[in-house]
Length: 409
Length: 113
Image 1 (cartoon, chains in turn orange, cyan):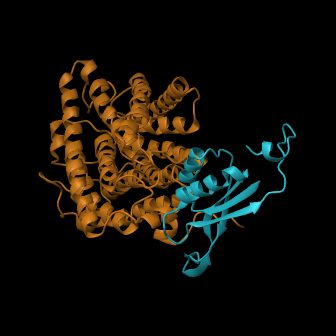
Image 2: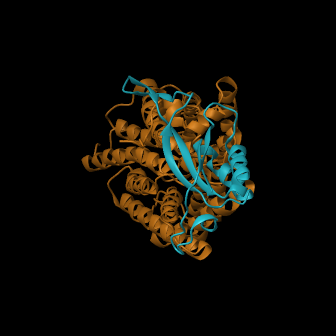
């Protein structure tokens, strides 16, 4: 039976999540040097376009068609059999295509997150090929394992409400891989270039926070109490993490920064994602406060020591924040919030923590190995990196023949 | 007293600054300019319309030095800015008539450093 309220909420949520990808474009775009601004916007928009088609053609089928094994197969190719009636195993009260288009927005933003790692130096053609291969051979299978019917991590009982493992750990570890394979940006000699437009970073953060209500509360797939819980804990965790990051900076560097506060908000949103439908408001605060500690350590202490050039901290925020969120779900999940979920460690069920740990480890290992192979293959056949002169001139001019800003007029 | 005006590649700015510090020159003024020399600029395309000969972003440095610092400052700029490619830029050296430090109203050579 189709419920009109549920359907309306899932459609609105789909639109909210769609807006996150352009939001991410400004979040990342503000951080790069201005000669590369358009390249970031372009990469995000092309993903929005290309993966929208990939998803309705075969991505949705690979990820969600019922099947045991590596992925869902091609039974739902071009949405064959994915109609306007509910498909009860995924969502009993909304049209099947509403669920499909909601999931499409997740499939779009996940590869877009990786852009932060190879920003300012990747060839556009190679980027496009890599993204399509990665979406097909990394995102779609992992999505199937965790959320698809017959998926083995789903059957194991792993809790991932809105995509902590599927989206954030998955994209975050792929980001580390691509940053390591492509190598550091040239002519920086250890310096980090200043973000060219921090107000854009803040606009992007605001759009992400706004869209995340669709991402998490929409994942209830109904306009119900669970959606409200997800909405409330999402906002709480983002707020706690933003404050936490600002205070860490205040103590550590003497002044709180806008950039840090925005980064904290995003880290909080990442961490609450897997937990949003399973935890209540106090655990959400703890999750938010601590994620900023872990992510701050990752981007300000560990990254400079290890020396990899994850330009915009896709690994440091999404992978580290995602791992903490997935494990925290195993700690704080409670059946009093969601009877269809499970209790976590502090509610007397240590087994759940181990299941979460397994899901994290499997995602990390599979995504790491598959991403290395795909990225190396693309590098071998096309070459992932622009040459020194193109990098110096900027990707806007050399990859797209246009520039974001003029100096005269 | 001489005034050095140098036009360099934007991405070479940090290296040039470092070389200048090493040479003991700490006072520079930096501005962003557009220009092209033999490189003939770049081609940009907007909605299918080609615009050729567009200007490239460059960095302009202005440095006032006393004669005894001239050679080392010029050498430092060359060392930091040279890649061997077209577009590395130019250095101009001009005679400087006067220099005033506003805070103290000192004039001439003492006001430069």
